[in-house]
Image 1 (tube, rainbow, N blue to C red):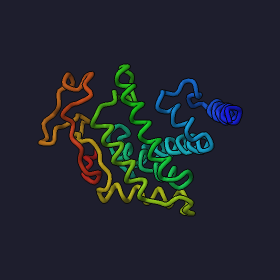
Image 2 (tube, rainbow, N blue to C red):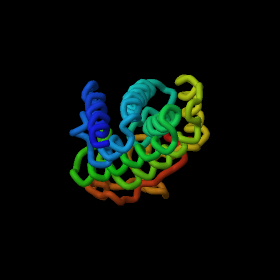
Image 3 (tube, rainbow, N blue to C red):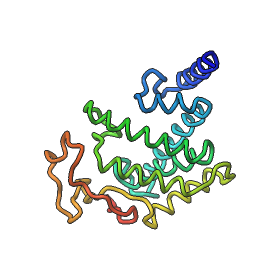
Image 4 (cartoon, helix red, strand yellow):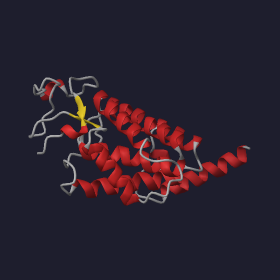
Length: 207
């Protein structure tokens, strides 16, 4: 059994080492734990993760959504599409646990003062991600033959009808409280908890 586990772990490490993504040893503890618990699904998960990022980057350059990849509709798309594709290929439970591992990783990133997608992670961003992850999981079933383009349409439509959540901002990109007051930058700096506000994804303000 120990030999088999070693073989599986080596296979996972090789899979991660073959891309430009972090290798196994560079992953956070939550991510490593997920990989070791799902060694046969890790390669697919890596491929889908890179795919979701690539598609989101492409959509950000269009006018299909609001163009905001940090708290906006594009951010919501990335998480929902990621979860939907993972559900489709590796199942709901494994997909959901990977999403939760990612959010634990974000808290570690915050504690270290590092950026994620250009901004410091915080509690409201994590809540947004977890909500959108769950919505993405609902859009498809494991083994579904729905093509990627069809799934992209499902996710975009869900965003436009308000099933996802985004962070409230003004046209200049300033974060707002739920009553519409601009939040001073010093109240956000190095704060896990703050006064940012989650709103429905169809309430996005075009920049």
